[in-house]
Length: 441
Image 1 (cartoon, rainbow, N blue to C red):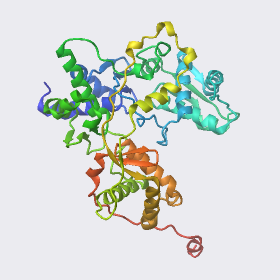
Image 2 (image 1 turned 90 degrees about the horizontal axis):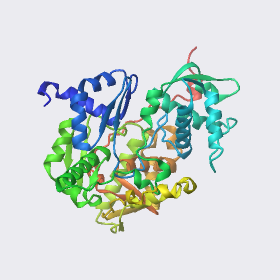
Image 3 (image 1 turned 60 degrees about the horizontal axis):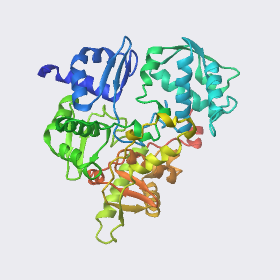
């Protein structure tokens, strides 16, 4: 039992660990690892019993070994400029991790690039040429991701200079093998599985109490991992647990956050913005435009003068599973070692949501840019289609919209923001060339 006067410290440790499953002496900051060590004896049973997570401590790391119930297309690794990794960057990251596993304690960036390039060259459609700037930049983004977490430590030189010109720049890295080992912890040998669903949490046969505990853990994990949990997308068992106050209270006690309940589902609210990588509403042109777009969609759905939009179900998770499985290297699977019983399907979605067509979205975005464009950053103001894509992408991550062929679906969480008042502040005008020429020396 955590004393009342220390609950805030314990909850801060829990939030830090849940947001950053890998904590090192420098990542996410120098205060995190001592905080986790202080509360490790309390965190270990709490996280295991309530979520099925396992906390592992080493001399230089704290690793939260999580389990995953569903594939998620929006929780992406990100570059130092907050751009999500594409397939090439993910591939380079995986190959870099493999190369570091075979390396010593120190390695130059060019040597690492040569090793990764040799492996990438054996993969159809990938490759890595140090003569191509796009390949170099993608590779350096993967290296920087590892450097941020302490797996690589810059000893000399500059990766950025190497990316600009590999003939003039170089970088030398020390390798922290403990962190490299902590980052990559596969639950199964990839050559032994026929489908990505084999990496998801598997139910174990057992007593009724065991089943009840597993369902409770899945429900609590859903609250942590998803921006909102819709009952229609959940199994009946999970939905019933989330409607019950006990499981929700456990999450509130551990995280210090509040759970909001609605008829369609539940969501864990983070008003301080420290438990999410996507605070919303937020600042910046994309976030502000997304909020304006929500208002327009809400008006469209509530207007009695317009025909009611068509309705359809959000894309099934099975579609994402099929897309991932289509990219599996079948030739590398050891068929005689495959355990087909571990492959399972995910819960099917059962919602019916209104459809906003692509043409309406484009027209609406043009109208928003025309009305509020003077407050937008110049690069967004000049490209409304790109701004629309970015705003829809953000709302997709937050489970407010769901893209489908021909438009987007408005999910129930959208209604939470329909009455938000947007205060538009005009961007300070930049001086023109003639204004600058007229200034006194």
